[in-house]
Length: 164
Length: 199
Image (cartoon, rainbow over the protein chains, first blue to last red):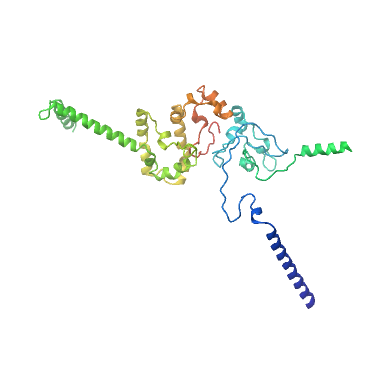
């Protein structure tokens, strides 16, 4: 019994030592600069923030990258008040306002509660638009995006099959 | 009582009607002129003092609520540094209208004395009512205070976003709508907008 205890303690100690040394090696391998890619400066240096980017304000609908993507906002939303008192977005995108504004109406799912009951007004869980919908900047990507649309994957796959 | 009052008035009237005995016509004319300049100038100077932002935010009700809200908007800070102060939007520039507005403002003095909005909660409770007064005023004068700077005749639709250009060239151009109909809450937070058309 006693020997088992001793062995297990020794095993634990060696294990923790291995983990400790391992993590130390990993920390050495990745330099500060690499960790701070998005900051583009070492961690102990305060970088100058980049210039503010312009929000694209074209009012032209952008296609979605995948079917369930919340559509992006193709216009500026500076100073739009969305709080308990008022939802500025709904001044145009509400069902009743779309005649005047000609803006797309928020989808019917926004009027449903989580039990799929339809409500008369916007469901509270969908009230804060910018939780899902965001305006776009004309900015250079900080990290390269290699996302491939599902349709392209299917197309590539069928091409491959056709070749065989 | 009334007879006594009448006799005093009568006495005053006879004094006014009598030609001057001790003072020359020149003294009275020039003196009147100088006194006129001093009083009129003093009146307008005092009026101008009450027409400055420093005066408006002298009250904590204005400084801690509406002024703080204005600070975050484009009418306070922007790329070119042109800014609107309180009276630019809230006091008519035309003299007679300005006097009329200043007389209305006596109600605001009443409010200050009795502390109708002297806490944040009281201000929030009154926000809708206060906002409605301003909407009604701007609606009635066809958004005159907006147009003092934003002149429709010199608007270049090609420099506006397509959405803005469409609205301005139709509804605004035809006079069917005025600035305040769409541009509510551009300088201060909006109140609860339940039942307001367009919201």
